[in-house]
Image (tube, rainbow, N blue to C red):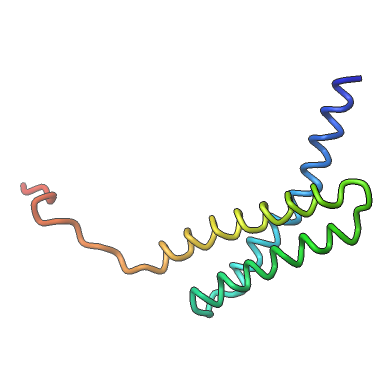
Length: 102
């Protein structure tokens, strides 16, 4: 019985977190040409929209699902946004003292 409950909770978390994580990634991927402020605002709006969708769809676990979905969307979007920003940043030259001389 306990194992069935744990499996149910894990599957519920996956069903709740996976769409939020995909939405966070998609939001960052689509908004590549926008400024950083606009991308962050769009990410927070998307996270709020996914949370509101879970509030409307789920009756028994609505608040918990909304919180998990908001957190997953914001966290995955922030992660992919930092990766995208670091890729776009100009490469830095190493300090001259760090270069190996032959």
